[in-house]
Image 1: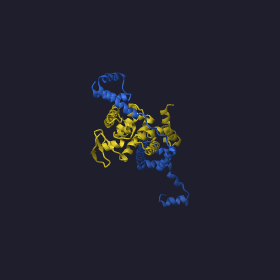
Image 2: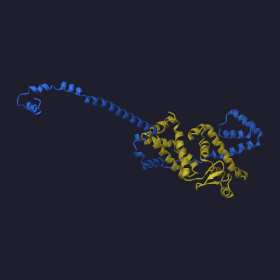
Image 3: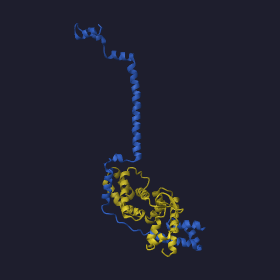
Length: 196
Length: 156
């Protein structure tokens, strides 16, 4: 039996209220989902764990609605990403758009330069390259960040990302292209300073 | 190939999504374009850092915490049949309405038929005569309860 067939059987049993089936499904996905959410929540272990629990609660409540149109893993990843995006919105984390404008926490719009202000740069000066790069990911719009996380951390192909995000493959291609361009723009000053 | 197209191919290459034929095209462009070579080098350096993620261990009692949340939300008290998906629930509701509608229609048609029969006096008389012979009352013995009752009714 393939992994997906086994997972589908588990979901059917979960939809009938079988807790042991849920436990088996959780043990198969927990590590991947927690780590996916960890990237999303600015490396907050607590938030990632809380959200991962919510993902499996959602799986428990919605198992009956799974139609089998995609792999079970795709369906679970989609739940995780939707919860992560909602979490970001609830926490009112600033969301940067590609044109250099940022929705502020107060809900207004103000001009934000793509390049960091000097004071912000100073706060980062002692951080290592990895942290700088991951910090810069926060400047990506949610869809670009999602695509980048799935591609780089999860090693998902464009086709898989397309299934998880419910967008076309050319759209995935475009999201990842823009994400890399944005990262490059944000990180170029660090490179010029020899920090990268 | 211009630099704009090359940059798109660089992105695809970085994600291992570039076919062999287009890779050749890109390599030919890179040989003659220092700007795109710098682009591919820097992009690779950035993505290399992202490729080595810190991996979190699964916290202890993770499943127990999920169960506790399910209990808290009351999800566990919902019987399995009520946890069916929206489409299944909708199909079930539609089927129920169909059955109810069919029953109502059948009830109205049958009711009409019997109501007509019930109001058809000739049919009623025939039915009565065939099941109850009123002439049998004529042979009642004198002063019997039946004859007295028949007199009371004014028939005899």
